[in-house]
Length: 73
Image 1 (cartoon, rainbow, N blue to C red):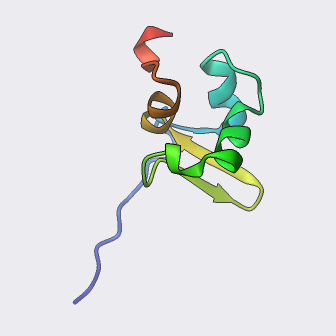
Image 2 (image 1 turned 90 degrees about the vertical axis):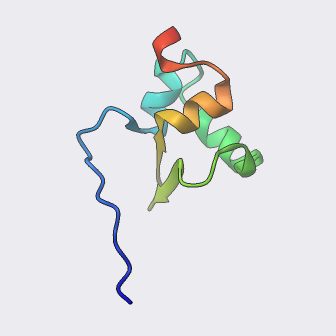
Image 3 (image 1 turned 60 degrees about the vertical axis):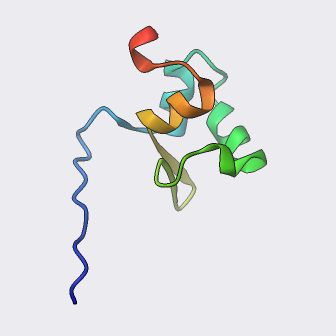
């Protein structure tokens, strides 16, 4: 049985680097990295991923960690 792969649109604004997300939510630029390193289970499964040294996070992940919706920013 062949497993279907999910396609991700990298132009989608729901995906962002950790620095960009931190600043967008009004946090220190290393906020996401710090929270991820200390409390990785705060991020819902599939909302954050490390590529090399770069962390990519989804809008859903930021909303879950900060308890602030992007629409409220």
